[in-house]
Image (tube, rainbow, N blue to C red; front, side, top):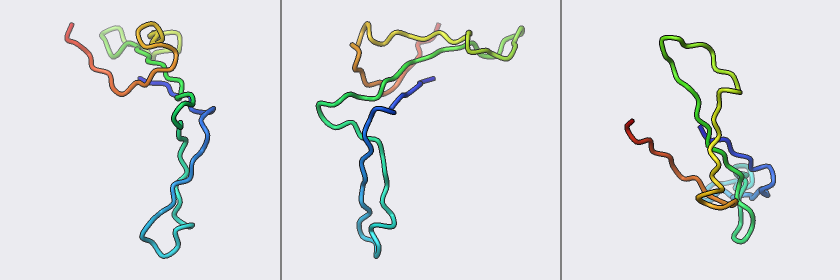
Length: 84
C-alpha cells in the first residue's frame, strides 16, 4: 500500500465551467506547483492471509526506502509485482 502525506502542499481551487453558478461547484485540491515539493510517499508491504494468519499489526509493515533509487522528491505512479 501507499502512504501519502500532502499536508505541506497548498490547496488550489478549480472553478467549475459550463454551469449556472460556477462558484457553487468549485473543487479544491492540493496541487504541487512546478518547482515546489511533491507529496511525501512511502510504499509499505505486509503479510496476507496464510494458514497461520493473525490480524496484522503496524509492526508487520515493511517500508521500502524509495529515496535510494529515486531521490527524496519522488513520484510513485504505480507498483507492479513480479511473480516469485
